[in-house]
Amino acid sequence: LKPFWPLSSQHLVGEDGHGDRSAQPQAGPRIPPAGLRPVLKSIQARTSPQLTFFQVELVVAHHCSGSVVVACAAQGDAECFQYHYKGKSGLGGSLVAHTRRALLPRPAGVAGHALAEAPAEDLTKFMIPPKRAPGMGVFAVMRAVSLFVWLMTLGLVFLPLIGLVFPFVKRRDPERRRMIDLFVRLWTRVLIWPFFKVQIDGMEKLPPSDQAVVYVANHQSFMDILSALHLPRSFKFISKASIFKIPLVGLAMKAADHVGLEREDRRSQVEVFRKSVRKLAAGASLFIYPEGTRSKDGVMLEFKKGAFSMAKRGKATVVPMTILGTGRIMPGGKEYFCYPSRPGTRIVIHDPISAEKVQEMSDADLMEQVRTVIESGLPEACRGPPRE
Image (tube, rainbow, N blue to C red; front, side):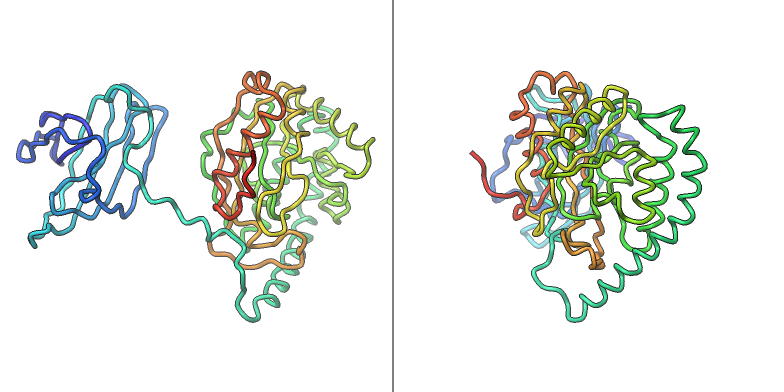
């Protein structure tokens, strides 16, 4: 076995924990020759902030040399990796599957990321397909009607509960109104459970719940709102005023004190900015779609700087997020369709930008950095035109 750096046999242990000197490793090149590179079949990496090692599990197709390219860098002073390989050698002899574990010192100059590259996941499954199956439009309309009926039915259950606690919440928690947010999140979870699933990646990157945060994401569909409400955090949407006119939903949004915006009204824009900064100063969080409108084809639109100016004025942390798959279910501007989608939707939470870092950056630089981060989680075709 030839890792990327020198390794002595004392580091190798078998399943029983004893050293295995039968597979004496030797120093190998940092970058293996192209002919010896294994074909990665799957990779799964897990990290834990409580541990000082980084575990990587790989299944690789073996090459004739028997070399396995597996290496990773750790968060702590040591690294632990597990590898499992199987296949056939170039001489025709079958190779016996082995599992070895190694506890290695981190080599100098190696950063905290995996050295072995895994195939990137195909994100096109979250994109709007160019063509739908025959008859799918009629089925999607039926699903949309069912979704609306189910929304109203659940509203008759949750809205009285919201009304019951509203006087208490308004008096004791006027800016954040966390109890009402809790009811709204529960309402949303029950609403979409029969229709599609929501996966959240990077939950551990969320700041503490008592910290003022500006969450920023791309916007493809009305389903972005329902997906975002699966996050275990209380926040206020800055939403167009027409959303507040939806029966029952508008009442719940007003009770939770979400922020309504009249896009063409300059006075409304100024008032929304002031109210949003006030909420951030009081410890509330905001969820903003800086594109300002939904993308009809899934390609990310240009950002507006309002969200980033609010974050700077309110001294808040910024958390970029990439939302995938919502436009495939309900395309922007076509709320009368609700297509089935096996992948469902996914929210990718990226590394937060601290309040201190936000204050150091200009609005333009902050906006560009956040856009680049969000784009990195989108399929290539949805990242928009290149910018200078």
